[in-house]
Image (cartoon, rainbow, N blue to C red; front, side):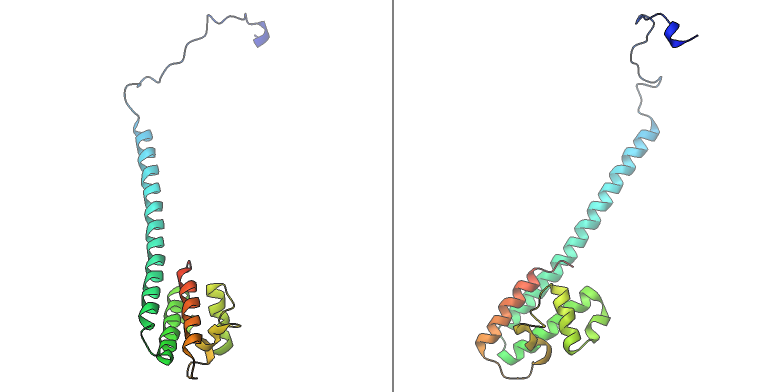
Length: 154
């Protein structure tokens, strides 16, 4: 019989109905909902822990930078250079701290997305640590380092 040959009548249609076990929730549905909730919880927890790690690195670096401001200008620059080495090691591993000179400046510029260490006043932290500096130049380096460390996302 062709569907076109059937009489058109809505009387033979059955209304919407639930499966035979309508009063109980099926175990597969409960398991799927529970697994979905658990997966969402794990993803949220992983993101929170990752964000906390970044924030704690940022906070620790800014706290140490602030503590270095109490030092004499020459000692302050050395403390800041050590801080940069530790931050780079934390963000990129031990291989990052083995570089010297222009390679180190390029790595710092890449980590912080700037040209402060290769072209700007931050060069003093790369190759001129033991030359005498004025307080004004050291203050400028302090301000820029604080800005760069506050942007740590890595």
